[in-house]
Length: 567
Image 1: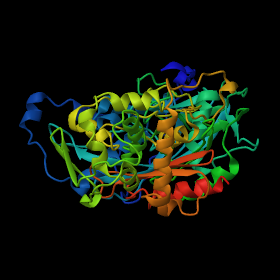
Image 2: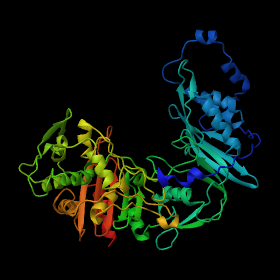
Image 3: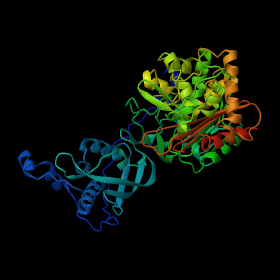
Image 4: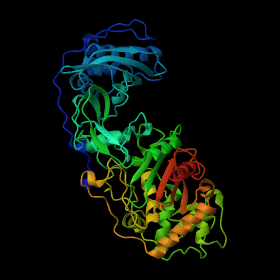
């Protein structure tokens, strides 16, 4: 993975000493009333049943009763509150995993004096609130949060048990994660924008995950000193418990839940432009499935990044089919191979079959005697898929890697990123890849980089932190397009911005512009994901609105607004 491995993998995590037993103060939860204590005797009876006795019992089935849900939740919460880890674990359907995490709740997370107040059950789900204290050496802070548990029938005997997942202990936990209190593995980082002003999640809400990633990567390099905190330690894709890496789809950083004492932050300058970041935040505000990225095309500097859903950095880590925005890459390949020419006739039938699949255009349109320019501007699927018989299985993969720097997992942006995926496929799947479906996966960072490559003429790896900060090497592409191919590709995107599917969104965006729309079908979604990628002058941007529909109507206005804001 080259230099992609972030500082999170280097983090030392202090093993806190074992703390005393939890002080049990049983609270009758709302909706439960007063309930009996479930002690070791009841648990022992449950686990000591002989096989013959169990076999004689009738396996319970059918929907859970309200009494079963209530009593199971009571049993679990009461035992957990008194520090009876074995008893609480026995009330779940995965006692081994539950025992490990519940033990760590006091031993590693240093949580004490915990009380659990149950709310009113909603079917099989029981909400509950937690109030406790987290203590480490001389530092102590109150901890309060809400969680929930779900009661299910255990496989085999149908007994009601808590459906065990790490999120029962704390909603920020995923299975494989754990809670740890101690000296922070990484000191805090005071991130600065390109003008030297501090970047905070309060000012830019969608940058919370980005700031976490910067701390992972640069906490130890920025000159700060660590504080004491309660944090979620991610299990990690490789199971080493050391957090995220510099690159990889879906990986997320460790998360601080509570600061017991503040560390001294180091300072780290980023490439973010404050005015453009504010504009990006405005564009995704209230749009949970929206993400957008703006780059400087000539350098790769990330000027703005924003996500409508603040819990995950889809803009950098998303792994989504890009739909017809992928046709920018495909078109460059067809032009290079003389399988298409801008102003020459090019087939765009209603249907085209390849590899056993029958492909069609949106609303089954066709363009009779039309040019490749017309097919690109209107986003004709069959115009691209009709060339599949002339292509090798790895042609698109090689084009994405060699010209656009994608699908090599070697970008070093400054935080974790997914660098696109264009796998080698055959037959129908290869044909689907030509129009951004099949196994192709991208995010707004990747597709903004595609437009930047077209505008600048060569690939410049995007970055949020300048490589001069830590001497890291940026990824490169092995070749550039010829001047003829590049000119033709710019003509296609320019025409699409003026007269094609991108025209409405790009109206009023003046200067040297180019754009491409996309809609990506996703199984189980009523509406496709809407995509848009474009450039204006030395700016390049891309966005996606998940389940948004046509890209020109959803992602297009976001991207166009950012290009306008860039001046």
